[in-house]
Length: 623
Image (cartoon, rainbow, N blue to C red; front, side, top):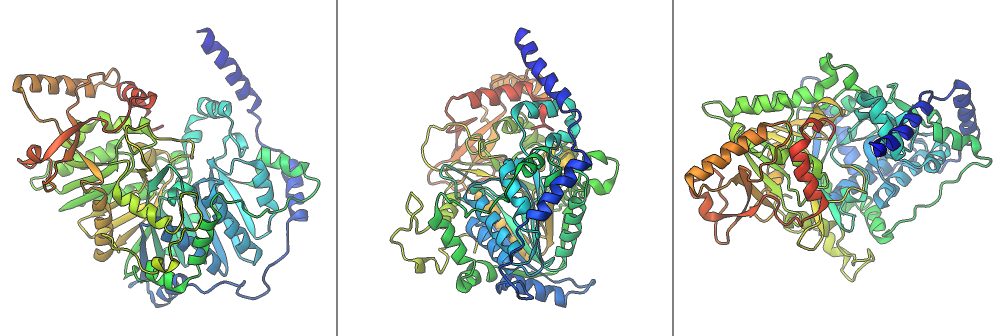
């Protein structure tokens, strides 16, 4: 109790001090005047096209828009599975922009990937392109000095932060706790959208944030992620959504942020924009070169593109928790649910977090009760591959429900999945362990090798393992329904995505694209890449039945779910066997159990995972 009082008093003091946390109009006007007076108005280009570089990606989007009609839309769609093409496409489009660049993101770090993108955007602004950056405040740009420089780097570049805690760019730990205590609903509502839109003609949508681990540039832990690049009329839907977020009261200009405002007013001389300091400059230079290499762009981005018809971009409304009764506020979430509920043969779902909202549970339960239910395959994280171990605990708690009530076939990613390693090798090909050029010939990168297919901030670390080596975690969020509908976006299919965060994504109504995405997801479920979750094999009938009955009761409890012998566990394919469904009579002859948390060493994170399973059921919406 004395320890609780010691914590509560400073928290209460912070709350009192932050009650009047908004700036006065006079303070904002003074900072605006400083920015207007000091902004660097020099231009690197005097041409009408703002020195835009030619781009086959933007050209294809422009042509699709030109031939589209309301009755027959035409789109150019590219699945961005591999991390290097995903980054190269972004740089190429930024350099090709003639009029505008709008960017929305959840995380923006100041590592190599974050610095690279930010520097490219500054250069675009300085050649005359209007650049607008909207980032969620909690995990982006938490350095007031950096934001001070961005505020004055060019009048063509504007930055706003979404839903800043107590009107500040940087949130201290005590302020984080105070935000939960004083204004939980607003604090817990985040902008999880990811969008890069160029000239309102072509956009990139998906799961990637601006941080090294989303592009296979982290030394120890990287994400398996996915974007889709869409050129055509859907870009106009993206533009309309961005405008709603940009003009929403929760999106604050930099001069409205208390710590940035103070920094701007304290400046006696305008800050300069320094050259980026990269940890691995050779790797960055190679990606920049690829962005202007016509042969590379043709092989990796133009040739794999598909020409399709209908594509829809969906986004929840900003601050959707303020309008839970308005259907449009949850537009993207509702559309995903409708897609799944209409499945006839197959639902293929890839998500980092297998934690279902009540509505999702109802839909999957209804599907499974049909006389001829669709097959539902789920690709998700294992405890060994995730850095969100507390969220994983919720999925672990409800394994029996997923297998029996919903009929899920669950595959959990291995931390050293070979398919993820191939993409890492591609992103780092030609570089040694220090990131310097190796003796490999650049020409070897002209053609792709044979392939099956032609979360938080960087402080989050996964649980320690028994095995060694570079690790990967799943971050992609995608659905394929009946090989007809295919969705790529930011929605994690969990309660947080349903009720709190705003989400966005594209739905492509094309068999060819659905087939590409289907093969990509199924690749992650192959035996070398994932463990299968299946019921434990019955051994002693009476004891097995008793154990399952106790486990069912324990799992249904909101608290004290402490029964250690769970209904299902992880299985590994035996050598010489072919992959089988868990419902196949020969499954147990070809698979061996490897434990509930394979490869995870005993650690505080494993213990906390067990504790969250037992006591954390009420925290699903927060996690």
